[in-house]
Length: 453
Ligand code: XUL
Ligand code: CO
Image (cartoon, rainbow, N blue to C red; front, side, top):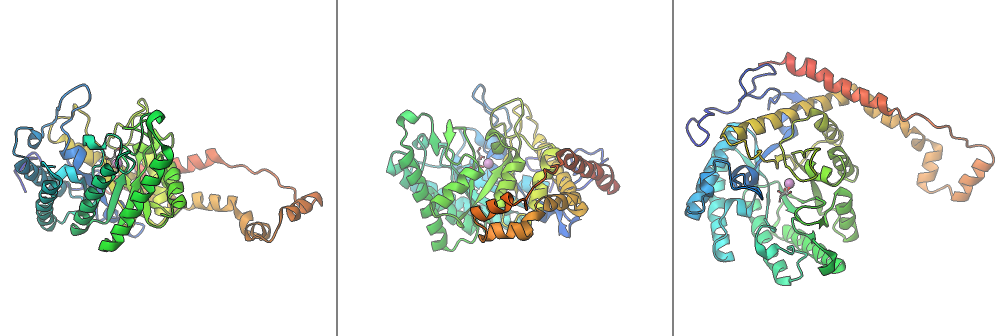
């Protein structure tokens, strides 16, 4: 496995243990380690995203590319360059030793001069991807269509004022559902990149909402027509690139699905940095989705608390990851979903190895968060205390209220007769927060350290 583009990494990254001096080893992540009876790899189902890692050269609005991505040179033959990009991406995935990857149509296939050419490029590269999947064992976590980069989508895709743009988006989604199915993808994602507005002065909210609902119905119908068995996922984000994005957060998307008869067809792909952009925590978004049965998959990354934009950094805080992972474990774990690194290098991280350091660090932080979450489950006190807080609702009064046998007047009469006189009880927040820290710290000093390779 030596040589290749990442010639500094000659064999798959292995577990080295917490005190390993080798930066190109996992400190915590051990794919085969059992956590609550399940392999770590199966809990986390890590994916590499092709857009930030292979289809972006480090450019930002103030400067040109800084990263070493020769296949992105404009002068190259587009199909040759696309093939080189795919070869390097699979070399990376294999050397990193993770099971999944994700991509948009445009990340792998040149668009060419017409949609027919795009489709034929995509078909050829899908065949190549199938070959790589067979050789490396990597699998597709999800596919998606890029409905936001091309100028035709400047005013949105499904929510565009022009129905021809809607139709073009339909063509891309049909192509990518088909490709995702051919590659055995376990999910299909719709992120509404420009499904929103820049100004209300030119935006008809009623029409755009109806268009979006129609689009989502068409996608779900087509999924059933072709027999695609993966999960359809919507990725909430409140803003950026538009000033206001319709799929604002988990609760907004959930409400939209229910209002439009789409419940049961879609789940959510929750991204940590989108949660914080919406003014929530990642924990909140995950907990909301689980409470409503719509958690699908995760885009793992983080923002920077100093910045109010989508910095898409690799996750590195166990404190931020442990509680979302606790919710996921309590909710029964990810089924078709996984943790996709929708994260990008900093522009100055221009060595080839930096892509490994970024992913290794993120994966280890997730693995440590998983161990801490499992410790919270095994300890049991968090769940016990939450359960005890609501115990009254499982008793006679709670059952009568929820079962509908007590009217407002029945309840009022009982209170007036003096039979009901509730006393406030402590919510014990600081105690609970200390319990969480205790588990996070205990795993830090015992678990991982005791398992050094
Ligand atoms: C953009 C974003 C996208 C989606 C896929 O913020 O997260 O990369 O994950 O279109
Ligand atoms: Co994302």
